[in-house]
Amino acid sequence: MRLAAAQTAALARRSVVGTLRTPQALFPSLFFPLVLMAIFTGSFGSAPGTIPGFPPVRGFLDFALAGAVLQGILIGGTTAGAAFALDIEGGFFDRLVASPVARGAILLGRLAGGVALAMFQTLLFLAIGIAFGARVEGGVAGVALLLVLACLLAVAVSGLGIVLALRTGSAEAVQGTFPLFFALLFFSSAFFPRETMTGWFKVVADLNPISYLVEAMRDQIVVGVEPGPTLIGLGVVIGLAALAVTGCALAFRRRLAAAP
Amino acid sequence: MDHAVEAEGLEREFKGGIRAVDGVDLAVSRGEVYGFLGPNGAGKSTTVRMLATLLRPTGGRARVAGRDVVAEAAAVRRSIGVALQDAAIDPYMTGRELLHLQAVLHGFGRAVGRRRAVELLERVDLEGAADRRVGTYSGGMRRRLDLALALVHEPEVLFLDEPTTGLDPISRLTLWEEVRRLNADSGTTVFLTTQYLEEADQLAARVGIIDGGRIVAEGSPAELKAQVGDPTLELALERPEEEVRAAEVLRRFGELQPSRDGHVVARLPGGASALPAVVRALDEAAVVVTGLDLELPSLDDVFVAKTGRRLEAEGDDPTHSPAAAAT
Image (tube, rainbow over all chains, first blue to last red; front, side):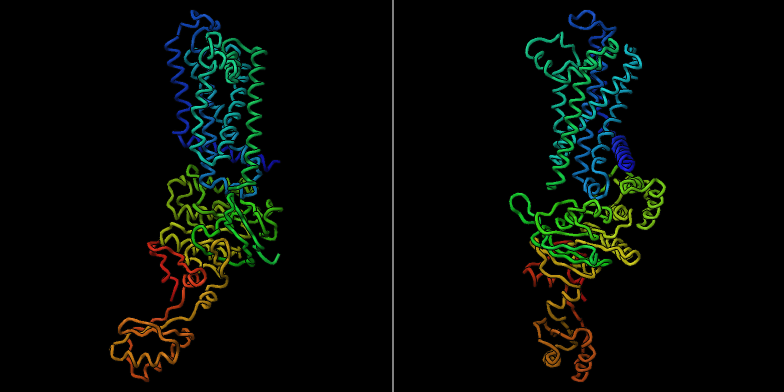
């Protein structure tokens, strides 16, 4: 067990180092959410109080922060999957498989790398938000819950990327899922509350699990720690993460057995 | 436990019924350097992937370091070092970081990992580049790092899949030297695949020629060449009018072959040991010779004899002409 933990840690360290050394991979997951947050905040700066359906918030920045965190993790998550696919393409995966490393460490190492990146992003975005005047109503507990939600989401998104990597063995295929994540994001309550939506858009947002996740995150910032939305968000993200990890394990076993 | 690598009727069929490996038998002794020679798509890599536990056989069985590659895959992985085609190396890490990582993956502690990294970097002559990212390495440096990575745990059996494909001649020689030294110093069994005749000839004590997923010939390079036929002797004459006389002399030693003007060519079953007698006979016949060339058959000739095709395509890397393997 100790050995497997050391192997997982070493592989996680490699995925973090690899991400940090490829700024072109890291950049989109930091840049786009921050730009979008700045645009929304600039456009609607004082609007929340006047638009019907908006929760009572001090400013749009408080409202937009959770959406930015979520967006960053969705984009960053594809990085883990793409990196895993590059390992398969380049043969590093074969080197791992031909070594006596614990099989689980190969997956967990990459997932842990994704989680570490998500923690870094979340803390960075919160720090930037706070520097520009946002306030986390939930305090330390709120931040901690935000981090937990963010990390679990990172497991789900990275896991999905890894499943695709294992099934296709192609980094391009994994990166091809990028628009899907964007669709999930925009057809959710990540940027506007569901109360302001109408018609089919609201139906989609109601069905989109991302909505419940972002609302749980946002609650920590704009309202404070509330059991209801937090538990729903946790439930949704734990479900997604469990699905992704199971998918990873199955796809991994399948790849090792079939080994094309 | 007699053999480092043994296989019986090893098969791998891919989807669509393509048999990449079709009944391969192997018996590689401990400490041997075995060369697996064949063109692209002959089944070399597929065989190595099965032996290295990366691919499950669809038929037959194989044991590496005394363990079954399917039932005891984990034990096999502890005993083997693997350097696969295309030097599978992460470009964003430094050579030293990758060696540390590999040591942890093999269950060594940090201190041992550091020491092994220093030893191996020195061994493959990469100390100067140890802390540079691998992305900046040349092809030859990558292969040497790849080899070092495969050696972190001092494996009993080392698999090298086309270790010098695409390398320049100097890098190739360096890598050959390293493989020889490794085999001589540590007695590591080396299972090497190559599409280069010269490489098999230079490194391997025994060569298996694979084509269409089957081994079509096996033996030491000398044995294989002997199967193909005799060496040929070519004389260059100072005076073309002596051609007939020279031919009469050579006929006594072996069958005459067609030749250019001013030259006489004959098979020489006795090889180099028959040369003194040939020279004496030419001298007695007063034939003046300006050149005397003994050509040994190459592994390429073996390949042609066994498969009816040449191994190395026209226009291939000129440093790998079959001639380099001869004489």
